[in-house]
Image (cartoon, rainbow, N blue to C red; front, side, top):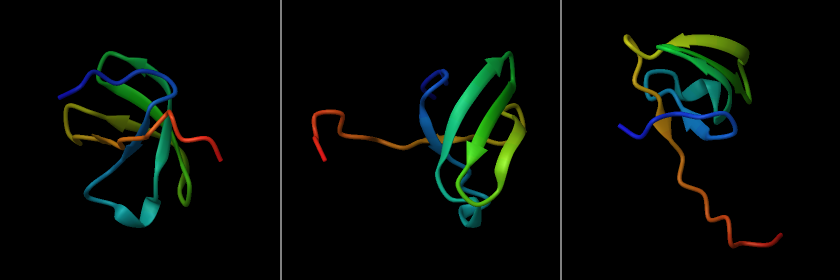
Length: 61
């Protein structure tokens, strides 16, 4: 799995209702993520495998 870092966009495959999230901090297996529909949550990545969301950084909106 790709190492997570602040600013990355992720999703929890077990909770799609949370929507996309942005990693706020990473300390060991503890990752704080601000999800669209669930708010800021602390996720233990030893238990939950967060999936990075691919973004096209070259797209200008």
